[in-house]
Length: 149
Image 1: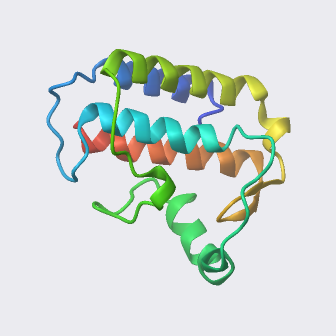
Image 2 (image 1 turned 45 degrees about the horizontal axis):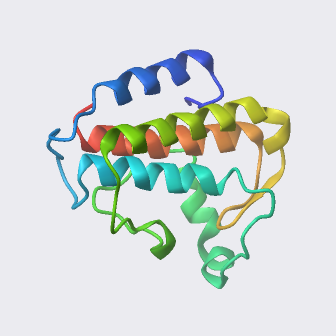
Image 3 (image 1 turned 90 degrees about the vertical axis):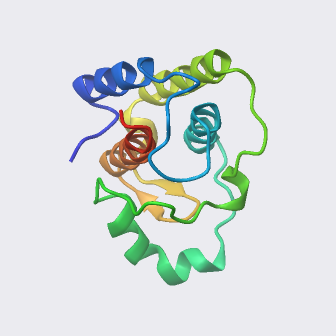
């Protein structure tokens, strides 16, 4: 499985992101390319916080099934559920959103795998560093694919 901690995978993501334009048509969903970039940054940025968010009851009930879907599968369902805190309603221009996303990706990688080993995820519970890297890649891949990249 691909992990955002791998140098070649990181470069692949950056290359794919660089091809995204404001008018790139989506293949499914409702978000514009700018909204998608902001959404991805919100999701990635949440993993950078020092204190994990409080775990919801749904996490305890469905985390094992969801973990298989979102961490260990590189293909997500189209038009899937988005947690309310990650729904984007307003955006800036694409270039500023893109800059923030690339900075978040770099910050995630710079923190390093040791930072994420056995770290608590708000929904999936404790994840290994490899699982964190796979989860972040899979989410970015899903949305880049949404825009044909």
